[in-house]
Length: 161
Ligand code: PNS
Image 1 (cartoon, rainbow, N blue to C red):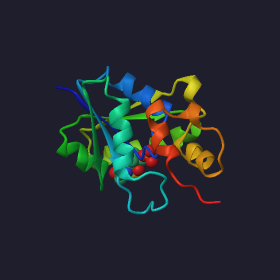
Image 2 (image 1 turned 90 degrees about the horizontal axis):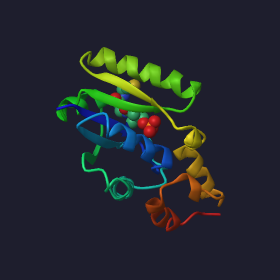
Image 3 (image 1 turned 30 degrees about the vertical axis):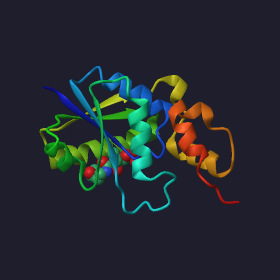
Image 4 (image 1 turned 45 degrees about the vertical axis):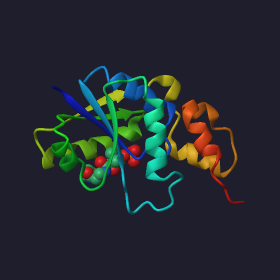
């Protein structure tokens, strides 16, 4: 059984993430979408349970997709979950630089684990969680960037200013 992990911060999940999950779920038997608990990032928009709830609701139509969370090293989490493949999206050359570095480090840490890159669909290439967070804070229109199910959670956030 081929098991893949799609790791990320998902703060919040975007339409680009959803597209990638739908595409990746066709490439593996079981796909684990794993939210990273990053103790260094304390100024996030959503809590981990909120991020997971959105991911769960948005992927309800995909029976082979599991939503989980992890902290620590991705390669160790992959061993724990018996996954052979890490899936990441690439929007641009600047993504590539960072992703190449991460994939090479992960390969060094666990040579059995492969990273598979999917190119982001052009209509989602300009969307990022960080731009959603900025638009939320400055009250710009971000509705077109996130799945419908994410809107009610994000709209409930009290933004200062
Ligand atoms: O959505 P993001 O923030 O781009 O996701 C980054 C993520 C979670 C994939 C990456 O930060 C990660 O794997 N963190 C876990 C720590 C780790 O394994 N680091 C070693 C690779 S450099």
